Amino acid sequence: MKRKSNKLIVSLILIMVVSCNEPETVVTNYVHPDGSVTRKIEMKSIEGDINKRFKTSDLQVPFDSTWKVKDSCEISKKGDTTWVRRAEKEFNNIDEINLAYKSDSGANKAYSRHTGFIKRFKWFNSEYRFSERIEKILAFGYPVKDFLNNEELLYFYSPENLKQEKENGPDSLKYKALSDSVKTKTDKWTIKNFISEWTGAFSKLTEGKAVQEITRESLKAREYELAQIIAENDKKFDSLWANGVILKKFIGETNALRYKSEADSAMKLVENSVFADFKNYSVRIVMPGKLIGTNGFIDSSQILLWPVNSDYFLTEPYEMWAESKISNGWAWIVSGLFLAFVLTGVIIRIIKKG
Amino acid sequence: MKEESEKYNKVLNILRKSKPELYSTEDIEREVIKRIERVPQSGLHLSETIDFLFGWVYIGWVRRSLITASIVLVLIFVYQQGVILKRIDVISRQTIVVDKENVKTPADEIEKLLMVYKNSERRFPSKTITISEKQMKELLESVNELQVKYKDLENLIEADPELKKIIEKKLEESNRTKIKL
Image 1 (cartoon, rainbow over the protein chains, first blue to last red):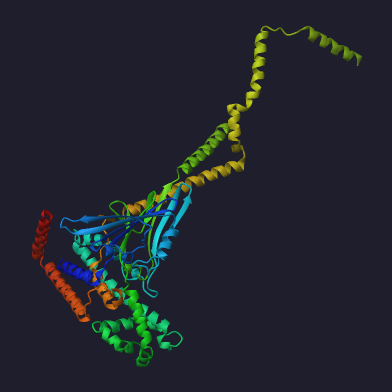
Image 2 (image 1 turned 90 degrees about the horizontal axis):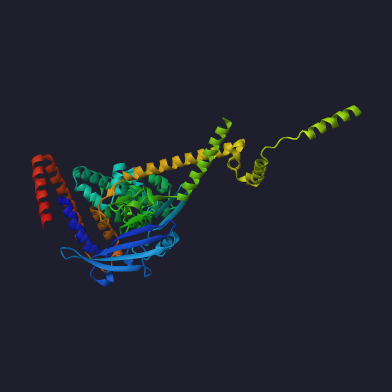
């Protein structure tokens, strides 16, 4: 409890320090049977300055002047003002959404995101599949499922409000333990990814000119060794790295001196990738007909929900998908008539034969 | 030959002379007309319609093909509906998020955010309050220290059931007061 409030204080400080102007954003895709999509964005901001409130460059998803916009403001009982912008746009097909993602100038423009829509005719039913996919950031990372079990994975991908609800609910101790376990394991996962990505980037930069002991394969085989060196020097990592001490320990003095600049460049690349500057948001999908499959969460209004967080697509693509079906009434009638026709024919034959 | 021809003519004469007796010529006329009228309608007769529609039942390969098609259709229907019902059942057991609220920044990401800030000065250049690395380190250390203390406190509470009860009671009271407010 106390830790929560401490973290809350720190997060508030961070909000001030980092000056995150991005609003809380929820994107809702209303998918239609013809493949068109009505996309709605709800953005909430506490920013008082009207010019800074919903700046396109701060927004998590593509947005421009072609959207129908409705602004409002909500005042809480305490008197806090929240500015809400609701925007809506009709996309004739997913290609238009993908084009918007390509030309995005928002906060997450650096990330490759695209949507997909498939319609399958299956005689009695027509099935629809809609997906939003974010490509992975790291080229050499490890999948998170190698580190977490099924229960931990479910917790890892859960929306934050669901996690909080569980941690404050009747099984609070169980979920706090689960949360701690997930945190410990994901920390380990982050370090492993960091090392793997660094060895990958470093071997790429030194490709062709490096000696055999610093090839990709040999460095990969020694990742555990580097992890140990980092763990031993955790608190002084920055200064030890800057002085080249860690590098010397890992690849030897001669190689460390020769490839210091490549090692630093690789480190910078990895820092930018692993600690991705991604602005979180949520995606919701409303499918046509009856929902038959999804990898998302279902909210109280039966709408599918996914939190979008950079950890989810660090080492593997993150696909949010939903499948639904609509019964083809005419196909049911045609099939019924056909069956009745064949059955009658068979009965007539039996009678005449008898 | 002559004798045979004479016999034949005699028989023919006898038959010609002994004509059948017609008791009701009108009835016969009516029956004849009726039968004549029926001739063009014979195509619409039920039994013939049935024969026309279901003539295929007498052709072996057509009959077998249509029966196979019907069975396949039924199997496809049963399979499709079975798969759909199974998938709907899985969905009904899937987690439901009670609240529709947005995803908030997880508390565990705080350290990561600090790292982001630390590692990328260029990301937040203009509108930020700049703090020194020393201050940043102090902040991180104090957060870590608080976490350790919190963990100790949690262990202490867990070890003492009475203390746990008292704290839970206090928390409950505190929550109630908040609701009243």
